[in-house]
Image 1 (cartoon, rainbow, N blue to C red):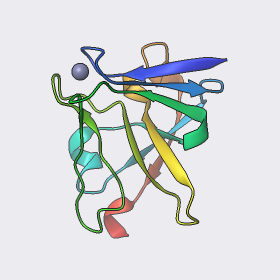
Image 2 (cartoon, rainbow, N blue to C red):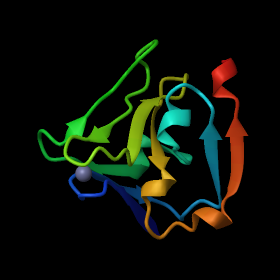
Image 3 (cartoon, protein in one colour):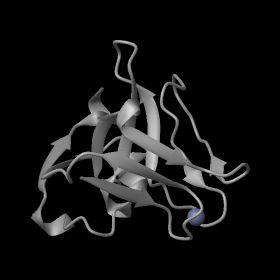
Image 4 (tube, rainbow, N blue to C red):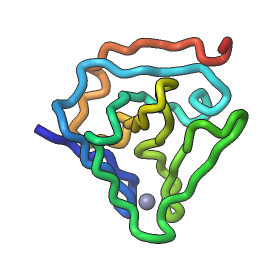
Length: 116
Ligand SMILES: [Zn+2]
């Protein structure tokens, strides 16, 4: 099975190979608290990113390790990319941008990113 995370206008998206997760991660770091993400991490090989030229905006801060992508037209952030620390590229799926994901049914793991 697969599912798709997409921005509001549909310009950028990522098709994820795998079943919808039963849990998601929230975080209280400086960007997550503002954006309100509910995240699920997958290997880059399991994510087919679609982003026509000029649609994929990128924001980095601090160590610039994580690419907080967002749509240049509608501003939504359906996914980000980064490394897992062992050199593997990961995609952080924002489950709030997956229409068929039942957010209220997810087990939420709150990460204290602000203390890292
Ligand atoms: Zn958009």
